[in-house]
Image (cartoon, rainbow, N blue to C red):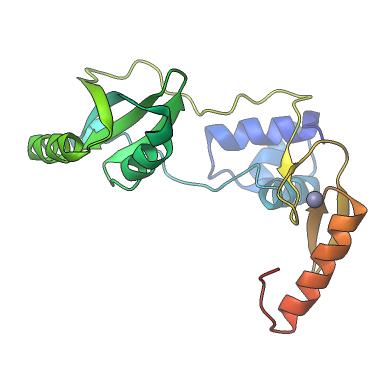
Length: 203
Ligand SMILES: [Zn+2]
């Protein structure tokens, strides 16, 4: 599936201001309000739009941002990144090439830094780490770059593999469900019906 011109216009507007009404978007793009509403619903259902949230600048409430880069053995990458992700002060974790992990750390006070470093030092499977405090943020844009023609990759609702071609869709209970192929559709529909009857979701 592709992002067409209409989706791209809507996504760009919502990415810059998630509080815009469907009417505002319609007025600014020349797309009709019902179309905007239907497209937004579809983008939400396919998981392209994950949610709407206020973008609060941590530095205006006296919080500091630091970037932690750490190195560990390849076999520990998974467990170390999970441990980091569980820390509330860690706001973003990325596994980098070369068995490195980068984490963005936001701290409410200086005291929190000591606590965090103490915790970090206690981890056994880290070879070394580096922590640098951000002096100021020069640019911060949302991650997704929206352009017309980019592919939307939806995981199949049944097998979870990315749907590369046109999806097989099925409307059930007023919602569109996306599947990669006919056999996944059959399995999914069976499971969906059983689930509705109150049976277990497990396959
Ligand atoms: Zn599938």
